[in-house]
Image 1 (tube, rainbow, N blue to C red):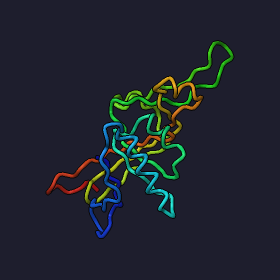
Image 2: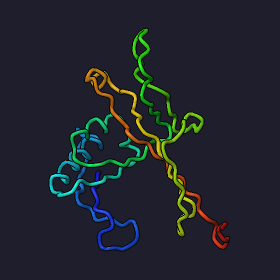
Image 3: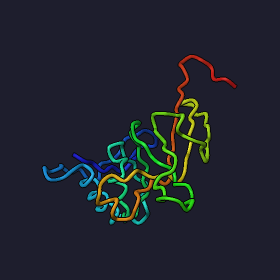
Amino acid sequence: MVTVHWPGFGEEKGSWALPLRHDLITSHQTPIIKAIWQLKQVCRQLKERPITLWDSEYGCAKFVKMTKGINADFLMRLSPNRCIYAEPPKYQGKGRPRKHGQKMKLSDPTTWGIPVESVEIDDPTWGIVEITRWSKFHYPTVKKRVRNSGETPECKTHSRQTVTRQKKGKKKAA
């Protein structure tokens, strides 16, 4: 079952969301195919380009490639076992040009490289929230038909958010 939500409807705070579309996945569909169909239906009704949020099931090259023509922005969680790649280095003139640059293994901080941007926010509810951003990364191609299309599914920006909660009863450091 796939549900498309309209967030924050009727509340000033909280994560409650009003369901816009709620459809069963048939035996000949996948969650990705159904979600893309739903997103297209919803985007046709909107006047503004939406920011969409996706769980790790959708953080893959297949989903990114299949949503290329949809007028929406995507923020998706990537599985910690996922790998993405930086742009390849400039061609040196010998051998086959490289398809991928440095590998970023999300479960291994030693492979992350230098971020483009990093910011820390001291939130009264969540404590210290750190957001780190890397740019110009892509997924490795997954299937022959994707490789032969000449397009590499992109993960243009990868961000990592870390939340350090304050313990109850303890004062925050100044």
